[in-house]
Amino acid sequence: DDPSFAQEAQECIPCMEGIQYIPDSPGVFTCMPCPTGAICEQGQFVGGRQAGSEWELDEDRGIFLLQKCPVGHQVSRSATLLPVAFDDPSFAQEAQECIPCMEGIQYIPDSPGVFTCMPCPTGAICEQGQFVGGRQAGSEWELDEDRGIFLLQKCPVGHQVSRSATLLPVAFDDPSFAQ
Image 1 (cartoon, rainbow, N blue to C red):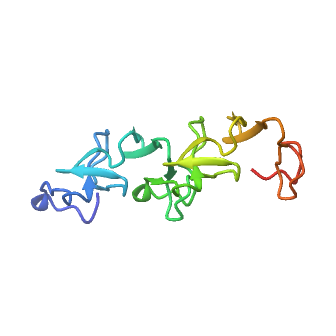
Image 2: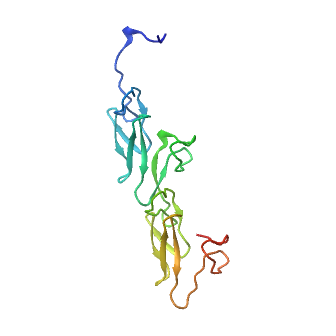
Image 3: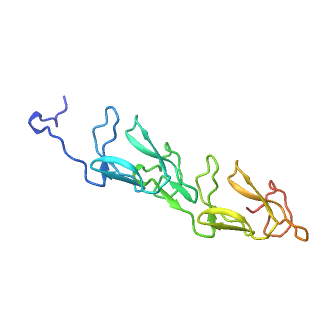
């Protein structure tokens, strides 16, 4: 009973090459925009542009969702480049991509649920978006998986631990703690 239906006009129209895809989902018949971080060829979703990115088909919505990026890259799911939730109003299916952390000044931990590049601590070395270790030989660092940050646990003899801009040795839960 759709007034725009015309039996004689029925035909298969190809999706725009490299720009759109049709998911293999029941009831989805419309070309979807290919996410920025994905490759679409001949109307099909091929995979992520970034090696190691993980995508999953949401059959209910008929779209592919970026689940995870490789270490050194943050998940972006909106025009603001933030890793928003799939049900967030700012989620943009076509904006999904893996964004590399800024070389030498950011890292992303291989920690469940952490998708955002973190600032590299002053006393640490970060390369290719990964935490490498402490600048001071003999310093000991530990990953806090809940917060997705590395914490300085111990310094070598003759050095004190500093966790704030005031250079005082504050506790991790102190309001002046600076990652």
